[in-house]
Amino acid sequence: MTYEIDKSIMRCRAFAEAAGYTKSALALKAGLSTGTLKDFWQDHWSPTATTLRAIEALIPLGSTILPDVALAPMNKGLLTGQRILLIIGGGIAAYKSLDLARRLMERGASVTGVLTKGGAEFITPLSVASLTGHECYTDLFSLKDEADMGHIRLSRECDVILVAPATADMMAKMAAGLAGDLATTVLLATDKPVIIAPAMNAQMWAHPATRRNMTTLKADGIDFIDAAEGMLACGEVGKGRMADVMDMVAHIEAFFIKPMASNTSLPLPLRNKHIVITAGPTIEPIDPVRYIANRSSGKQGFDIAAACAALGAQVTLVAGPVNQPDPIGVKRVNVESAREMQAAVNQALPADVFVGVAAVADWRAVHDVAQKMKKEHTGLPALELVENPDILATISQRKQHRPSLVVGFAAETQNVADFATAKRKRKGCDWIMANDVSASTGIMGGDENQVILINDKVIDYWPKMCKKDVAEKLAQCIADHLENLNAARRFSAK
Ligand code: C5P
Image (cartoon, rainbow, N blue to C red; front, side, top):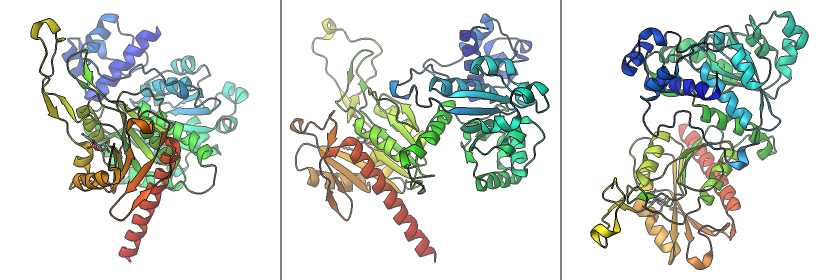
């Protein structure tokens, strides 16, 4: 099977899973006979090009299902030399693990697969082996495996073990310390860190037994890539879908980067905190080829995202169109317009902290013009504008699920501290980072920044620093603030 067909199959499965189609509903929608989709979730399913085209035709245009993302240059070799043992459990999400393996390998990791009996119901050892370039191990008692690579060696000769999908059954076995097959034996015998990506039906996820197992596994030091919410393959809605592949990649990058970045045995102060950051400009279409834009490079926001991730935070970076590589260990969501940015931010919430660094366009064209405006038709066009939603103000003024800390930026060209103080009050955010962006300062698009941190108590003038240092100082201030809030809560609870 060619790579293109393989990719098309994965795209169709990802679409069916995301849209919650059962096989018969999908067949009906695509105008196919149910029999054609009999083995849809199985690795040996070999559809004709016509079948694939019929399903692909259902995928909305512009959908980001399995996009072929061009890797940012800096991230290409990020996992170089890291050895990942990927245990693939028995769930529909097993097919996503093939894409996961590919993404990890693109970043330089070497991936070896272990397929459970259940996993092999969905994908074959052959597809895992051909994708990873290593033998895929399945059988605890296979003499060949034992002679070639015993299960103890298998469990030790890697830098991390990743279980994806981790079914409820696999988690129960891990929590109980059972070792009845190769995967569980490896997990019991290993001295390496273990990361698991659960995937199951919502009821199974919520079941007290699963909750207990999770608590046990977390106490045992197992790292979790949290399951996502949404339509499940079984047709029910709720929590239990395996995390998106790119979320898993970000988690694994962060896992490898943090020990290097922190270079200390101290606990990471932003661990378990979710921080949503906007960065870059937004662009607002005038017609299909023209748009309103601004000069923001996104650099400061990207540096803040990287600095927060390096302190252990789970970071979602909602970025306008910029030419910046993905920060390490950060989930990046690309958007173009202010309205898309607002939708992506809302989707990313809840969060402990929101930092609005983006230079969101204040206005957009009133009309979405479908055709290119022709200059000969109308003479000078009247460009009618309407105000964009204020993302920072909306989040600051939330009554429910407001992040504990909301930080805005104020780019001013005069009376910086006064204008920014007024802006903080007007928008309702907790802190505002003010800076002078007059052309003479070279801050917009440059490498340095000089900011003033303003809150309800202080106006703190920071010296001129490179944007990376500003980012690290701000990330530390955020960590200190959350720690103080925590301490205050503990004190008032006494
Ligand atoms: O009003 P002004 O654009 O100067 O406010 C700057 C701050 O507000 C920045 O933090 C920016 O990210 C945020 N902002 C926003 N949505 C807008 C305009 C600004 O989140 N529509």
